[in-house]
Every structure is written in C-alpha cells, then in structure tokens.
Length: 109
View 1: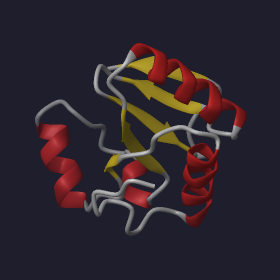
View 2: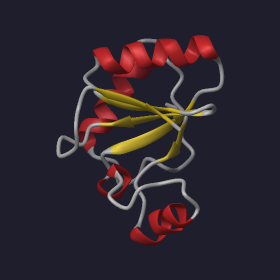
View 3: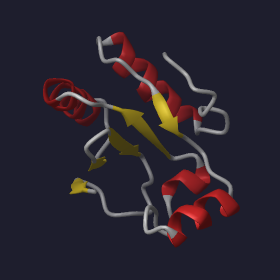
View 4: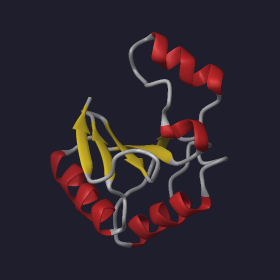
C-alpha cells in the first residue's frame, strides 16, 4: 500500500479492506486517514468536512484517484469488499465503514 503516513489510527477493519483492495490490483494512496478534532474542525470551517466525520474514529480514508477508469475499478472493488459508504470527488474517493451512518450510499463532492 502506498502510504503518506496517514494510516496511523485507522480502524484495523478498514486497513484490512484497503489491503484487500490493493491485493486485487487497485492502487491505494491514502491521502486522509484518522483526523483529530482540531484537524476536522479546520476542514469543517472550510466547508470540506462534516462535524461527525467517520475520519474522527478512524473508520474512513480518502484514497487518491485521478482517472475515470481507476475510479470505476476502485468503486466496484470497494463495494464488493464491503465498503458501502463511498464519496466521489474529482481527485479522491472517500471509503467509509462507519455502521452508525446510513449505508448503501454514494455521494459526490
């Protein structure tokens, strides 16, 4: 897995799914992992996060994704691997396993 030092604090269940995705051939570059309250609030203030983000508990990771084909492949593999909360942005995918939030959802940034 390509790491940017942002996997510390991620829930082991999420790390296992990310490893599974990588084993299936998806490139995994985590660009945002677990956040502190302060880090998350700074993003909330900029309109780039929500106050109850799954990043706060290590149940979400943003993964770099620039190309349409790669995005499609990663979304399909993530869904099959059990990630049923996916956010799609132009340059990343938000992959989330927080069961306290609605599942079977995909949203756009």
